[in-house]
Image 1 (cartoon, one colour):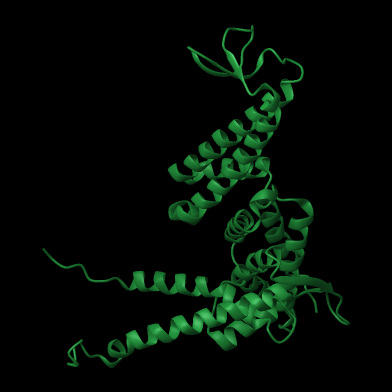
Image 2 (spheres, each protein chain N blue to C red):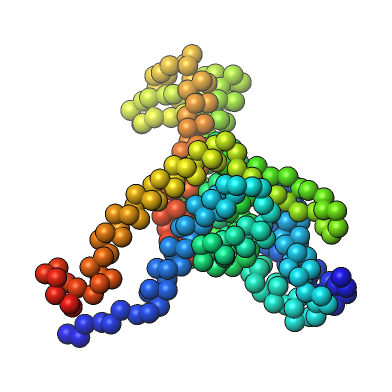
Amino acid sequence: MNLTHCIPMVDTYFAQLNAKLSDLPVERRQDFLRELRAHVLDRLEQVAAPTVDDCRNVLKALGAPDEIARQYRMEMILRTSSWRLSPFKVLRTTLRWTVAGVQGYLVFVVALIGYILSASFYICALLKPFFPKNVGFFVSDAGINFAQFPVQYGQEYLPNYFIPICIVMGYLATFGTTLLIRFLVRHLSQLRKKI
Amino acid sequence: MLKSTPKLESTEKWEAQIRKGCLDLAILASLWKTRLYGLEILRVLEQNSRLVVAEGTVYPILSRLKEEGLLQSEWVEAEAGHPRKYYWLTAAGRLKIVSMAHLWKGFASSLNQLLVPVLNGKDDKGEPS
């Protein structure tokens, strides 16, 4: 089979698709592109001497790179178990959705607030051994504080359990935020159409 | 006030949603008997289910079904030509498709009964509408 006419067009198509999926893990992306390329070759093999038009039709039937990337990204966010989704990946993905309008922006803000809250708990757990007097669960007339520099007045509660509680709260905040993002993606129809 | 006429476009949208919603079921069912690669799955869908979809639609779904543990895949070198990625059902995939098939059958059967008078063109008193 002579694919001389088709190779530049196919290469351009896959370069575009590769660029659209550039934020995905390399191994997963390459496997996906390899599979689609095999599909294109299969289709072209059905034609004795494929012309540029045949090639264009095969790529058209496959779908626009934008559309395939959109769908792959959607499947990725829905398919991966919540506990396996990295907050960084979710944040990066949701950041891209901010261009998709108000709903995309809303999802990004929810992700940002949720993960900042989660990171705050982990940071408190990390700082507690180094600043035992400054970091803790302090309750005073002024309200509740997790960290106070310099030390102020207030009653510290559960000092011995502060670190494990913070780690658990941090994990729950991460997990809960990811679940919430997935819930929003499933139910915000306008967003789903655009991402 | 004028009553708005239902648009053909809305029916097409509904049909597209139905097709999309059935894809998981159809893809898993196509792999019931044997292992297939992407293009073979598309052919089965076209020939046996009239599910005509953009070809690129199937691959992200296959990828998700694999991630969910319902499918397994392997690249196989062909004697002539290029390697192809074959998919087959896992044990969990088999259980899932059996459960989905029973649900579909029950659901479709109930809905068909509801649609009998509609398809016969009669109203609830048995009179043609």
